[in-house]
Structures are given as structure tokens and as C-alpha cells.
Image (cartoon, rainbow, N blue to C red; front, side, top):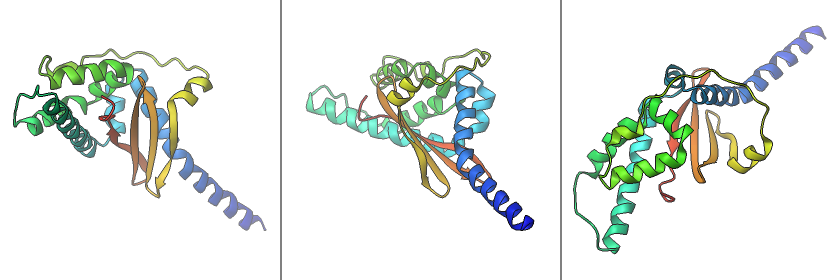
Length: 193
């Protein structure tokens, strides 16, 4: 009887831990972003797929912008958009770029538009930031309900968080790597920019 109770408690603990772990990983990422801790952000993101996803979103944004400008007959034809998207993704997909997006989502989208119009350098998406101490606060349920759209598993080893920041929809994807969870994708709201 004691052994089966211990096994049940152990199994429940493992299941509970499995379901809780991605939320804990998100909270740790949140604290790192909130405090502008670049080292903390660095360890919580798998940067290779993260950069590839950002580059893919920026390529889509460049195509949509070109199509819109073509219709408005304001297009200046350039063939370097893929190289340009790669250059921008290398600035955005960094701890500093992610911290800038977290603290200033409206400014981020404005900067992105200016960069694609070639009126600003890509380095503007990765300004220096100072690390600040974390000040815990109680949850703001009204704000959470306005911003948070979805936060749950999309597969056995994947977890998605859909949220609004600066009035724009974003999606953050975490994937299980071994026993830990890392952020692997940030879907930019290219349709809304």
C-alpha cells in the first residue's frame, strides 16, 4: 500500500512538473526581459531557429511591403531584400533586440518600418540596455486577460504563447530540449505592420 501511494505521488509529481515547466521557463524569460538581463535572455533562447524564424517573417514583411508599394506605384526595385532581412534578423534576434522589443513593442514596429524604408540603420533595433533589479508585483489580471490569448501545449514537446504587445499580435514558441524548455520562435505580426 505504501509503495503504490509513493509511486502515485511520484508519478503525479512528474506529470505536474512536466505541465508546469514551460510556464516556469516563460516566467524566467519574462524576468530576464523585464530586468534587461542579456545573459539570462541568452540562455533561455535557442538562437539558431529563433533567427531563422525572424528572418522568414521579415522576408514575408518585405514581400508584402513590396507588393503594397507596387500597387501604389512607389516601388523602387531592389533585389537585396533577402540579404536585408538577414541583416535585420541578426540585429533583432539577439538578447538586446528581444529586450528592446519587450520594453518598446510600438517603437520596435516603427523602427522596423523605418529600416525597410532605408531611413534608419538596423542597429536601432538593438540599442544598449542597462540591467535593472526585478521588482515582484502581484498579477494584473485585467492586463493579462487583455494581452494573453493562448498559453498551452501544441504538442508533446512544444508550447505556444500568443499575446498582444503594443496592440500587435505575437506568438512565442518554446520547445523541449532534453528536460528543459527553450524559446525557439517569435512570430512577428507582419500582417499588422
